Image (cartoon, rainbow, N blue to C red; front, side, top):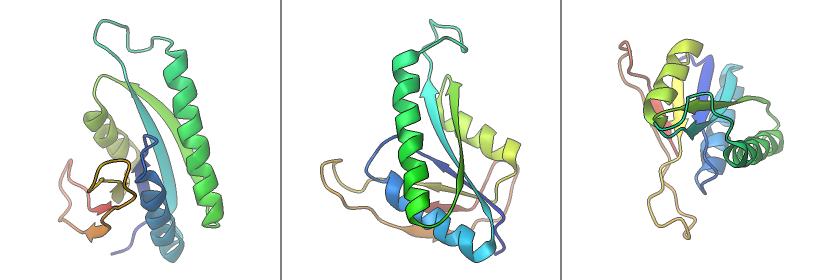
Length: 136
């Protein structure tokens, strides 16, 4: 499968590194673009464009680490902070807007204190909101 755009949602968890490394590796083979996003969940009691400085600072740190991980893999990622009511729909909306081929997400298989993750590549037939996925 030819991959030209990959989306990697990051949140500062232990799985971010392996998800980004997997995405950069796949992107290198295909000369693809990698987008790393961090979604800030905004409470319904606040306006969607509320200034959430502590959350923005945390997200900037997460995306700085994402850029460093990509640099270590000798690749470049484009980063962006999003504010949304819910993380899942925001990821799907961003993937649709950017017309990505693959979403690479970290999925912990053990408590966060344990550095164990499972990596898997799954290709699914394309549908309106269904994307092939790589999990790390």
